[in-house]
Length: 153
Image (cartoon, rainbow, N blue to C red):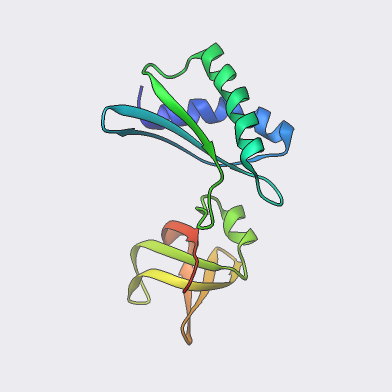
């Protein structure tokens, strides 16, 4: 089974539980590091999550995954917050991040650049407006390869 299929199967399994408990599924990674496989589940909730939330979710997900056994290999389950530089995977994530600092990469050159880091001023009509330095850049959402919150120094 491909990693993409594993991720989508796991998402379908755990999404109802997370929604019921008031958590948001931010991302799932299924990766091999050295000889070990890791299933990493990133969750959040309004006001943030703490270690107790991660333990609770990990225990529940572990039981659910053991019951259905969708992953053919031995793996380590890790549950954590998405961190300060949280990925912005969906348009809704981008919309919630207006006014915050972001780092965005694009599939192709936009305004002569492929990377933008600055304050997200708006997200309307499928376009991000990012203020970087003293300039504003308009980036079409359909050209975004990846986006995340950014801590600027």
